[in-house]
Every structure is written in structure tokens, then in C-alpha cells.
Amino acid sequence: MAYAYLEREIHEKLEIYVKKYNQQYTKCLIRGIEIPLNGRPEELVRQIFLHFLIKESTLLPDKITIKVETNNHDIEIYKKQKNETFKPHQNPLIIVEVKREDVKLQNYFAQIERYLTNSGCNIGILYNYHEIVTLTKNFNKFEIYYLKKLIEIQELILQVNSTNDENLFAFQNAQNGNIESFLYLIHKYGEYTNHRIIFKLKHHSSAIEGNLFYIKKDKIYYKICGQYHKKYQSFDFQDFEKLISILY
Image 1 (cartoon, rainbow, N blue to C red):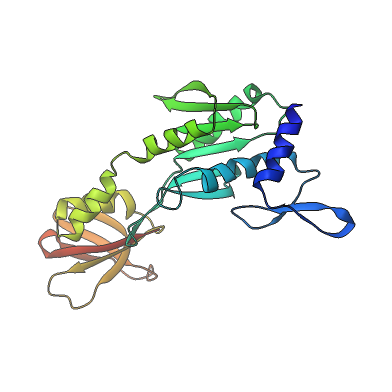
Image 2: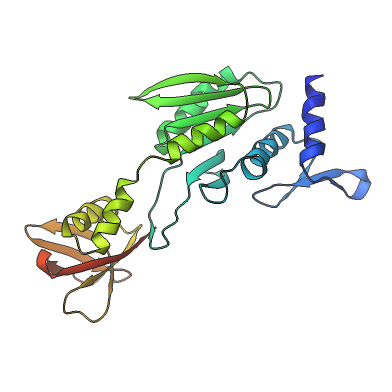
């Protein structure tokens, strides 16, 4: 009887179509790839979960971004980056692992705990259509909760998504010329080549795109993006005019 509920929900909520040899298919709501209804039970559970996030909840498109099969995770949920000039690397808000209906989620606690630790993420969800288990990381310990309905996941996401973004606040201050905020941001995002930081100096007509920043006394040293074989450039704190963008 339990399996019948999932099959009924699949046909009620997902777009099903028939191809050669009378095989039924649906399409992933995120990736758009074809999924055969027979032989992919875990994938169908994932599509029901995605359907809730996209079609039934009020989260999208304003609150979150969803990635599927990224970093070996079934589903990753990210805070939506609304500022087009501030898009640094971010860790997922939540990692979701979906399982077939007949598996015991308790057997996968260690797996989701490992994923959370390696990804710098604090909330994980295990879902097999019949059970919803959340694992929350607090001070390197995991607290386990059982949810009754998918709507409770929406409340969880809204709660974690509503936390103030101190980095965005610092970015806005640096855009207005605050040198302390700029120093904080280049320390956080500018020490390597994975971010492009564009800024403006006083008495310079054009903006500068740099990375590999470091600070020594009252000077900021950096390299022009793509010109790593050349010497470091530098400027005094007092020459900083404003930050323009930080992009991953």
C-alpha cells in the first residue's frame, strides 16, 4: 500500500509521457533530463522533493537556488544571491540526500554527517518519501529531528535563510568607501585566485581587477587578474576610493 501512494503522487504531480516500447518517462524539474519511471526509484523520490520546493512551496524564485547532483550530493539548497555585483563562493544552506522508499534512513546518518562536515554546511535532510529526518550541526555535534510533513522543511529553510548576511553588509559599506570593510573582504575573499575583486582608487580613471591580496603595514598588495607572472601592485589605505564587485 505504501508504494501505491508514491506511484499515485508521481502521476498526479509529475508530467508523464510515453515513448518507444510503451516506456513511461518524466523530466527532472531542475536538469531537464529524461527519467524512466521504471528502474529509478530513488530519482523519483527526488523529483517529488523537488516538486515540493519548486511548485508547492513559496520559496522560489526569490529565496533559494537549487542544485542537483553537485559535489556528489543529491540536492543542494543555497541562499539566492540577489546582488549581481556581490556573488562570492558560498556553502550550501542545506544538503538533501534522497533514498528509496524501502531503506532505513538511520543507516545513512554517517553519510550525511560526513557531507555536512566536508561542505561547511550545518543542516542535512534525509528523505525516502515516508520519513523526513533532519540533522543539524551545533558545535561539531549533530542533533537529529524527525519531521512529519514537507511543509516543515519550508519553515526550516526560511528560518536559516533569514539570518543577516554580515558579508553583504560589509560589501555595501566598502562600496561606499569604507576601508575597514574592504580590508575585511579582501582577507576573506581576496587571498587566492578564485575570486575577482574589482575596485577603484582615487586619482585613477579606470577600475582595477585584482586578487592574491595581502596587507603589510598601511599598504595593500595585489596582482592584476591574469597577470600573475608580473610583480605585485600596491596602494596606500588612503588611496582606496570604493569597491565595485566581488565575483566567484
